[in-house]
Amino acid sequence: MTRCSARARLSLGQDVFDDIGGGAIPGWISRMETLLVAADERGELLPHIVPVDTAWLITAAWTGVQIQSQKLSGRADLEQRVSGLFKHLMPSVALPGVLGSLRMSPDRGAQVVAEVAAARAAEEGGGEPAERQAGAAEVVANGAGVG
Image (cartoon, rainbow, N blue to C red; front, side, top):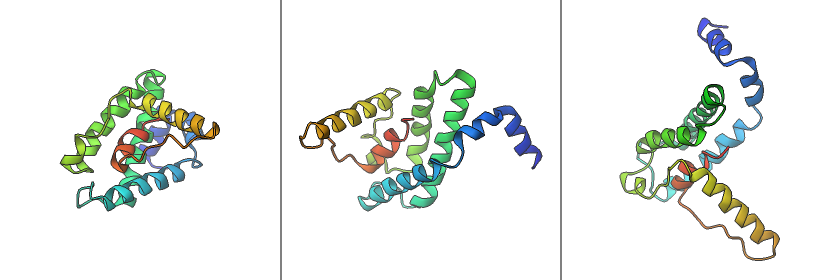
């Protein structure tokens, strides 16, 4: 183990690495890649974006924000931190014309949770799903912050 790696483990605590594990992360990366590919197909991404690489990077940054928020504030500032992350990342991913339509406010995570709950309730009630097709870039920016 390198010195830097050992310092990271000591500063974060073993419980962080046990909690994260590898279980869900590959699925998060895959979902993010799917969203980025769809955004690319709609012409929403900057030309240099490679969805597989960007999916990995966004997921890693999002995971880091989660860890730091947990360790420093017990997740009390998580929504604000995720919002800040996407406000910094998305200008290097999405076309300028798309940025104005992205909702990256701290309360966006709660809105996504409410939208998903409404869609599930509609499906269980036998009605049509309440889901709407959002631009993948918006889902990337907003949906990834839930968790």
